[in-house]
Image (cartoon, rainbow, N blue to C red; front, side, top):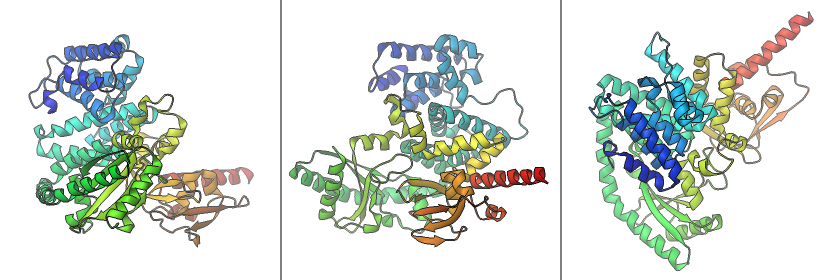
Length: 489
């Protein structure tokens, strides 16, 4: 459905697919009417009535995140404080303090004149991340807002198109990834690519479409064969397939691969009843098609830090093409579809400590926010440690630890706990003693040996670590030690 054709009835029907409390539906209708009144004389650059934008944002949240009613209400009202004469008191009196908190969280900073557009962008991004650390719904609204703006970016000048697309790629895409909102991430990436480098985008789109047309029959045949085999084994399943997004293909092509060599251009997703059956299906698929062994990933036993769980295996079809299978349970499939918003309707779980710790992104974000002396310092640390290419290493107990590429055992130690970093005596990587300046790689197993007699990190460690977190902890320790020495002398 084209979002320009979205109506309040479309939104209500989408909500009713997962939530049908009449009182809540009335709340959404009232919020829509209120927003329509406030935006009544406003139009977008496309010439459409402005209310189409908040309505579209709300609709995106129902389809991509099954958002709760307060979030949808806030989405409908999200531009009222910024773009109309609506006040904090108006929203609180009509819709409650919580809805106001969400609206305020996505509203740009007002009443401040920034010296540059970049300075304003940094402050507003910092405000979003601050709010996000408190309530994830704030960034979900902002992601939906950015997605609709990207879908209608054609009405901006070419320079603004490129600038907005680059900001989206650098800031919003990583957030969507960390939240596990892969559908939003993929669409944002493709839209950004389209505006940043339209020539490459259209050329690759053409080549990809040609390859997909040629290989689709292989995929459909494999779906038929696997489904028939599972029925024969009396294994209940549903099977569907998807194709890799254009920007994802572009990144692999930039690494030197041809489209035909990308193992997950196609992914056939097999959804079964339980975990044991996942492994049984994996064996059945391998009995039908030769596996490409180094592409076998058990993300059930060792989930991604985004809580994504699935078995991945790439196999050779009869024509020699590589096709990926993803095998998972229904719950895993819903988490893969929705990411963190999957937990919204799970009682007492949405933002509890356990979930914060499992989503390491939040833990890193909260810590960076607590320790930064300014918004710029906070954003610099976020971009250095979070909004960058990551590696995934393991503790000796098999826990996955997320670190920026280029990290060393020092960064790992401080990521685990500052006391481990301060008392670190030796690093063991993959069962061998490692230097403190060793660059860790994906799937390394890292163990830190501590010694209570060690007085603390050495100053030279500052040049051996990668993360702002480790550098800050080391600096704090050295300053504290220097102060103690001065007081003692």
